[in-house]
Length: 213
Image 1: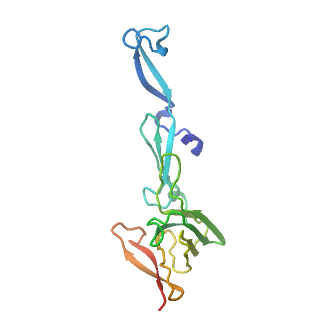
Image 2: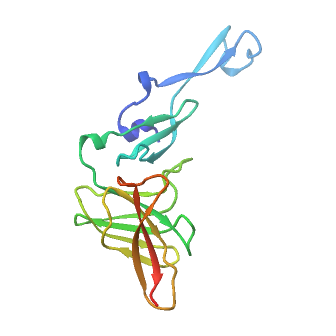
Image 3: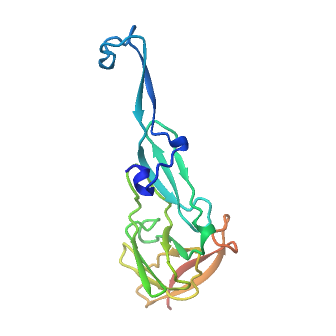
């Protein structure tokens, strides 16, 4: 889908809508080419610009989502959102870490409850034609100022619920529990320092699970 249909604008610099694709020597080696019919000399063949794929990610880590668009026969477009400069945003990024399931938790369902609403995403690992958006699932929370519950249903069948101390406007990492026959799972929350900070204070909420003795 062309980016102008996503944004309802033509975002290319200088309003460009086409470009020169190639040239033909209609008086020489390209004379038999169909586009040279009844033409002579150097002919410049132009074609319309179009978008082939796009990825969505928070590139500048300001809480809103930006778009990178791959163009056909042209340079990529980088569309940076400044929504965070216009109003306060409420969001949560959820990064999954599988143990019994695959490492990225592909196939998991994640629900985030905040502000009286529940937001659901299926982590299918894809975002469109020839593209892959950022893996942390991004949940816009509208006017919700507090996360009430995060629930993960893993491909393994394990179910996880995190219901307190989930910081808003941050990225949390949720680690899949290992199913145990020793008893129900208890969930522990711990702060772990990251090489690249993923929250404002340089920490990330790591959610792990351990079997009760």
